[in-house]
Image (tube, rainbow, N blue to C red):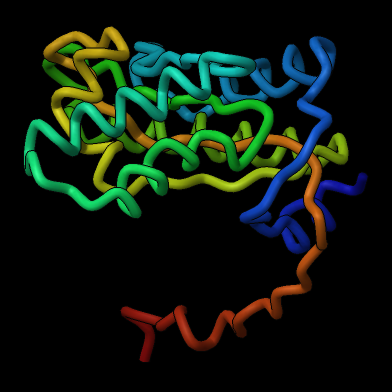
Length: 186
């Protein structure tokens, strides 16, 4: 796939079925993530790969975390949380691992982790693997972070769901003029 086609045509696919990416595809996906811009060469990110029955376990982690905040959540909400990780055959949890550094503030490290996550999406799409990057309340829940083994200096950037789209969407590209302003010229 041509690089510009990749950048201009990638879309998120909210409902994903089997197959999950192959080991070879995942190797390229992770290699692309590791090419993210990274001031200081800190590699301020890491990834958790969740598949198989790990997805059901993640759903239970979500339910436990939600109940810790609100004991009387509805059965409908419980089912929604249990089913959320089952939306795709494979999930990559993108994690920012922030490190003290005199020249690289936390925000730059978070952005590098976000760029790594974007690299995952692009490498997946380039190989015919569909994906969507999701966050939501569970991405910011401290109990979820603890249960997933995150350290105090880490945070979830997002859950990246990977698989095969049931239906491919065509999303129009906004016009650059809507987002670009010239500054400093007369």
